[in-house]
Length: 102
Image (spheres, helix red, strand yellow):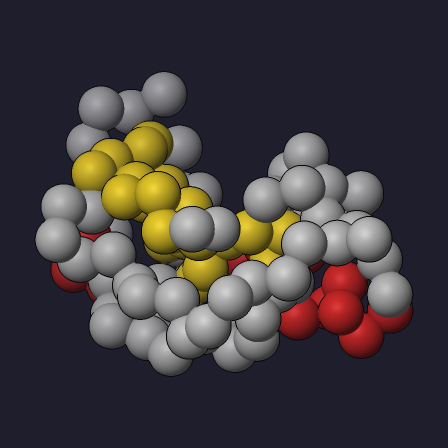
């Protein structure tokens, strides 16, 4: 694992795309934790979830940075550099209550 992220300049202030994993909501699936793409605002599920939609979004778009997002957890992760880091005061506010999967 690297100790530094070379993509911090790509972090954007974004609007979350959904109140839960965008793809899981569409297919009626469950998720474990949510991840927010800090390039475009896509909300996907984590790697512990059945479908790993956040990682699939990275592979489809090459957007490198995600934020732990349920609730905002204060950390970011770069897929490319394989490093976690603190977002400090740059966390993304939730748009509303995030429903738990059933």
